[in-house]
Image (cartoon, rainbow, N blue to C red; front, side, top):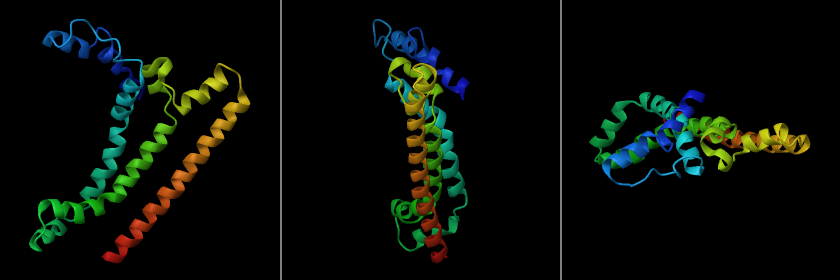
Length: 175
């Protein structure tokens, strides 16, 4: 995780790959300083790191999909877009919800990516909590923020669990 995040530093830096390509193409005259140490760099890093955790559950839910269902939708007159919207998408929603849950849980505790790529502007809840314990010695506020984070995660897990449970219940009734 740290290595995958750290890879973005030389790519987005002043002498990094992005600036060198833009300079080589003649798009810019001097290197851009705003590519790193901002919110955008944090978002790029988080998307890069967590894409695998989103795509894997979706892939697994699509892998379990019976191709005969899509073929049957076509036989009944559905266009490919209609077959996707009415067959593939609803059957892949448990994978989408699982991916969203994993990415949400991992991003709640993200500390390294905002710290490395965001600089002082990379503030996420994990960094704020760590700063309360490590830098300001405000342990009560750090503990309170931790409880708020754990509560938010528990509420999300409850909602996601009920959503997945209801979808699986309805899917079971359709078969």
